[in-house]
Amino acid sequence: MNILTFETNEELNEVGAGIIASLVQTKPNAVLGLATGSTPIGIYEELIKLYQKGRVSFKHATTFNLDEYIGLPEDHPESYRTFMNEKLFNHIDIPLEQTHVPNGNAADLEKECRDYDDMLTNSKQIDLQILGLGHNGHIGFNEPDQSLNSGTHIVQLKEETRKANARFFNSIDEVPTQAITMGVGTILKAKMIILVVRGAEKAAIVQRALQGAITTDVPASLLQTHPNVVVLLDKEAGGMLS
Ligand code: GLP
Image (cartoon, rainbow, N blue to C red; front, side, top):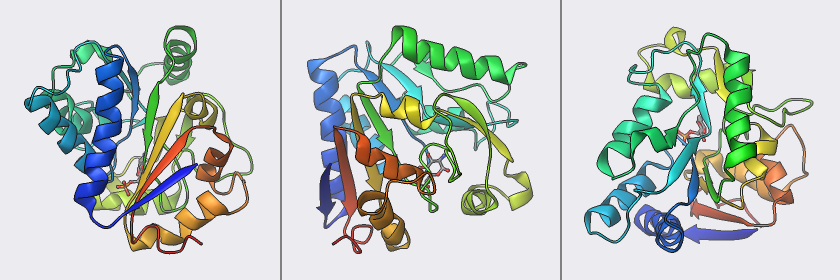
């Protein structure tokens, strides 16, 4: 695991975007695993700048997002599909049909999970997966539990996660109670993973995830078993690492 700590968010964003852009420059048909949440936004903004300067094209890339709420209309401002369109896809040259976000309104949600996993096992392997970190150690929406699901599945969101995400909604009652998420097994199949974390309030969970025991109580700690993980931290998030 290669842990990099940055003095400023600008530097972190440039390095994160630089890693993604170099991959797509050398492998135009790269498969990118993407994340939502506030953490990756700065990296997406840098990627858009690189695209606008003509340094990188996403015309042949494919993307798979980690997760999506169940029951929010696709065009709801807080659906992860809307987030990705607004924060990245609408500003670069990737054809939307090459972008994949689980459909949280599918008539058969179990089938949606199976189909999403089939695409990732049968035809596409993720070259580079971007991850944020939940306050309770979740990655995607894989919440702490006694055991973790390997493949894409339906998850019941923890109250702490709904509270953390309520800042994006008018009230906590509007936050969905369920989501579809890639499983930890699917995430760990990516050839390379970039975990991005910012802020002092995540310093303790960063320490547990990166230097603590590997346990399903901290789903991100399973990243310690992956051979090719780069961790990008601002200095606050890295503040408790030894
Ligand atoms: C959500 C997403 C995660 C994300 C996490 C952290 O629950 N499902 O993929 O990493 O929140 O969000 P933020 O980056 O806003 O702290």
